Amino acid sequence: MELPQTLSMSAVSSTLGIFERKKKRDVHLGDRIFFWVLRLLAIGVMLLLLGITLNLLRVSFPIFSKFGLSYFVTNTWNPVTEKFGAGAFIYGTVVSSLIALVISVPISIGVSVFLTELAPRRLAEAVGFLVEMLAAIPSVVYGLWGIFVLAPWLRTTLQPALASTFGFLPLFQGPPYGIGMLTAGIILAIMISPTISAICREVFKAISLQQREAALALGATRWETISLAVLKSSASGIFGAVILGLGRALGETMAVTMVIGNRADISASLFAPGQTMASVIANEYAEATSDMHLAALSAVGLALFLVSFLINSSARFLVWRATRKSKGARA
Amino acid sequence: MTNLNPILEARQINAWFGGTQAIRDISISAQPNTVTALIGPSGCGKSTFIRCLNRMHEEVPGASVKGQVLLSGSNIYDGGVDPVSVRRKIGMVFQKPNPFPALSVAENVAVGLRLAGISKRSVLNETVEKSLRQAALWEEVKDKLRSPGTSLSGGQQQRLCIARALAVSPPVLLMDEPTSALDPISTARIEELLNELKKQVTVVIVTHNMQQAARISDRTAFFLLGEMVEFDETATIFTNPKDRRTEHYITGRFG
Ligand SMILES: Nc1ncnc2c1ncn2[C@@H]1O[C@H](COP(=O)(O)OP(=O)(O)OP(=O)(O)O)[C@@H](O)[C@H]1O
Ligand SMILES: [Mg+2]
Image 1: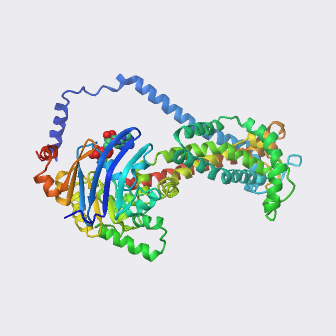
Image 2 (image 1 turned 45 degrees about the horizontal axis):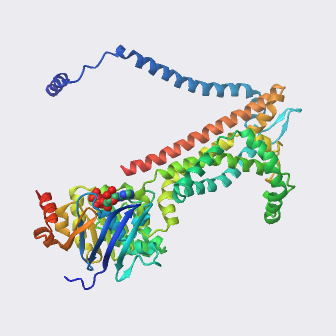
C-alpha cells in the first residue's frame, strides 16, 4: 500500500519536466475576481426570482386570506363589490394559447420541413429570413393589425363561414364580433410561429445525411424519408419547440389585450370576447385603486408567473431527459 | 464462369458532381450469387459508382448519371422507372452504421416491409427474426428487440443495417466499405456472413482492405482516377494482374 503511493508521488514531481509548476492561487487573481463576479450575478438572478415571488405573495396576500385557493376557480370579477375570482382569466389564457398551438404547430412544422427538406437553398434562405422577421415585429403592431385588418375580416368572412359549417358545435355559435378569443388565438399563432419554426429548423438541420440516405436506400419516397428519418427522430426537439411557443403565448400581453375584447367571462363560443391573465393585468392595473383590486391583480400575476415557470422548467426537464436518453443510447 | 446470365450489369456508366466528372465509362457485370469487390485508392470513384447502381447518386444535389444498369435485363435508368422501386430491389449498406435512432431493433428491421405496405404482425415478426438470423445477429439481440437500434454496439448496428436491407429480400445488395468502421472481430463476423448471404443475394462490395477483397470476393474490379483499370476473377487480379497499375497497387498494399 505505502510503497506504490510514494513511488507515484515522486514520479509526479520528477515528470514535471517540460511543464511549469502549478502557480500559487493568487497569481490568477483576475480569474478569481471574474469567477466571483459571475457567481454573484448568478446568485443575484436567483435572489431576484425569489424576491419577485415573495413580493407578489405579499401584495396578493389579502386575496388568498379572503378567498383561499378557490380564487383561481371561481368566476366573478367585481371591483366595486370587491368580489374576485380569476377563473375566467385562466380559462382565457389556456384557450387562447391552445388555439394558437392548434394553428401554429402544424404550420410551423410544415414550414420547417419545407425549408430544410424541399425548398431550393436560395428560396429557403429568403423565406427563413422573412419568418424570422415576424418575430421582430413589436407586439403592439400585431395588435393594431388585429384590430384593423384581422378582426373585420373575421367578422365578415371567416366567422360567418365557420358558423354556417360548424355551427352545430358550441365553439362556433353566437354573434361574430370579430374581436374575441378566436382573434386573440390567431394573432398568438402568428406571433409564436417564428419561435417554433426556428427551433424545428435547427432540429431538422441537425439530423445527419446518413439518416436520410438510410431511408432513401430502403425505397422510401420523399415524404416517407421525411417522416422516417426527420420527423420521428426529432420528436423531442419538436416537443421542446412547441412548449417554448406555448410559453410565449401564455405571457403575451399587448396584442392579446388589444383584440380579445376584455370581458371577464367564460363562454363556450370562441367568437365571444374573453380576457387572459396577462391582458387583465395590463388592462386594469393603472385604474386599480383599492388594495383588494391590486391584490387580486397581483394574485393573477403570481399565478401567471408560476405557470410560466412550471411550463418552462418541465419542458426543459423533459427535453433534457429525452436527449440524454438518446445520447446515452448512442454511446 | 462466363457472362452468360448476369443478374446485374452496368454499361458505360459516367457520373458527374455538377460539372466535374467523377467516373468515366465503367462497365461491370455480376453473376447471381457472387460477390464482386471494388478496390482502388481513395477518391477514385468507388462510392460514386456503387451509388449509381441503385440510383442513390442522383440524390446528391447537382449530380447526374449517364449509362445503363440492367437488373435481370431491365434498365433501372429507363425513363419510366421509379427510383424508389429500384432501391427496393437493390439494397444498400453504408460505411457508417445508420440505424434509425427513433426505432427499436425490431422496427428497424421491419421498416422496409412497412414502407412496402406490409403491416401484418405475424409476417413482420417472422421476417424480423429471419433477417436477424441471416445477419447473424438474432442470438445477440433476441432479448433486446424493443430497445433502440442505436443502443447496440457498432458491429451489431452494422449487422442490424444488413438485416434491415435483407428484410425486403433484395436480389442485389450493395455495400460501401461496410467494415471500415468496425473492429477486427466484427469485421470477421461480417465476412463470414457474406459467405452465407451469397447463397441468397448477389453482393457488390467496396473495400479498402485488400485481404478482405481476396478472401470474400469472386471477382474484383480495380478503379483508378475515375476509371476502371481491370475487372477479372479475384484470383487473377491478385496473382496475375494484366495491368501494371493494378499490380503496383496490389503489391504496394501488400508491402
Ligand atoms: N458530394 C460530392 N460533391 C462533389 N464531389 C464529390 C462528392 N462526393 C465525391 N466527390 C468527388 O468524386 C470523386 C470520387 O469520390 P468517391 O467518394 O466516389 O471516391 P471513393 O473511391 O469512394 O473514395 P474513398 O475510398 O475515400 O471512399 C472524388 O474526386 C470526390 O472528390
Ligand atoms: Mg467511398
